[in-house]
Image 1 (tube, helix red, strand yellow):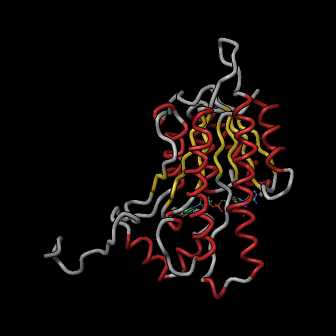
Image 2 (cartoon, helix red, strand yellow):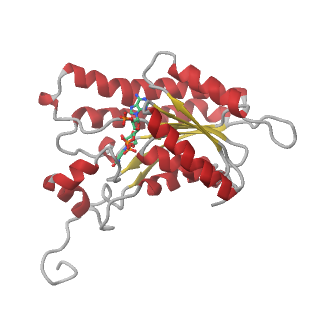
Image 3 (cartoon, protein in one colour):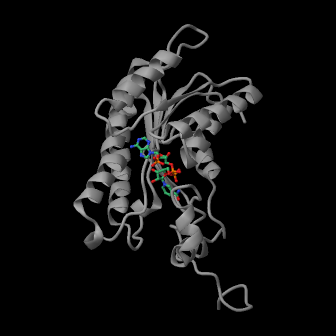
Length: 280
Ligand code: NAP
């Protein structure tokens, strides 16, 4: 815990579960005010309840839950407006809401194609646009009475957007697009002092994939046994990376894609069989 995000006002989409919830709690602990947006109202409310306890412990930070489907036409403008009303401005967007578990190309019907494109790419794109406008207007007022300038956007991609993984065509395609968008936005908005980065999580145990991980041996082998660090990630592993990218510790980092995956995507790892602890 630190106060490195004090004076920041953040919107986190998909904050009612998994990585989004852990990020809300982490950003609160580091001093930010947070608008926790999710289409699952109960999930968002639970995040706000947990955040309240975290804020009391820390002595700072506020969290407001907002039930909203980010694919709705007016969602980006509305949530940005609510953040400005509640906290006096906006400085951070964590573009996290997303869906997973797609199929191979020949198995993907038009309905699924549109669903993935709508949530994982179109809504994320539109939320980013609304955030840029709000961040340009300024963040909350500081002790000197002036509004904070500049801000940070963190887009949640996936290592599936970097490497080919069987049976995940449209999911991978949307996440690769998020990485391309991140680099483009870093170029467009650097002059506004808006840093734009992506995080590419590896296998993180959340409600999105817990069932598949526990029941599908192939999936478990393909993730856990291919990870040199020998474990799956926790939502907090991603939240820690997001908090870092939002902070001034990352003030010269923009256009970067940070893989947080226990070295899964950097290696072709298989545990060495037998008794020897090293091959050769
Ligand atoms: P999660 O536990 O399912 O949380 C995602 C949250 O976003 C859910 O509450 C979900 O609501 C919400 N959401 C989905 N679509 C929405 C919409 N249109 N409007 C508002 N809220 C919406 O999943 P997670 O694992 O934390 O995933 C968060 C992000 O990390 C996603 O973008 C995912 O692709 C990415 N990621 C995750 C992993 C992993 O291993 N977990 C790996 C790589 C990347 P519903 O429950 O109603 O869908």
